[in-house]
Image (cartoon, rainbow, N blue to C red; front, side, top):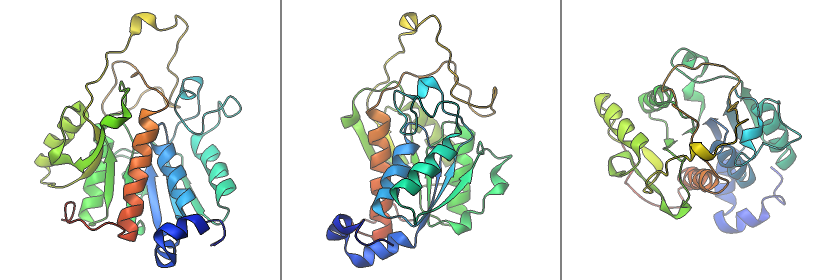
Length: 259
């Protein structure tokens, strides 16, 4: 590990904790508006190994919120652009790419026992439940992002156990589904802001949501693309990364999310 690169971080967390981060392997499912910022913060914090999972290519409508989306990267696979950026930040970080849409039928590709922390930033309920169920079965730390679309107030984002969430429709669905599976605890980032109805009548006539390399996906279909912006998903991503770093280093002491 290049100690000079992380000198300022070491001043906060100390050498012992930096060694913990360097020896940690994290997997991030979904590297879009939320997940790309999770990856960014983890890599800049000194995580030694990271797996990135996403089957999408970068498209024009990603530019308003996704870290890897630039005019120069449109059409490229997100995981390829992410890998290049990660190594540009920290050449010593080990990157494993998965050009995969995570669902029950692709889940067996992943051995969750290899990971020290699991981050869920995907959209489909079916995929999220599969990630969480497998992580909990192995008693692996996992954090999940709830709905960040159609929101404009990042100050309404909170970290809580799934049982203490409110307002968020996705969190309500996840609470019910996890209860059926007898999963009692799950750390999440969610928003208490009521979703804003998308202004579809003001949508450009030539708009086409091409945010996906596959034409159809199983899971929870979206009736329409949600509204989004640059500041709510990114803040959610940073909050998730902060929780991962604090949990790995045990920089904070809490029994709230223990099994």
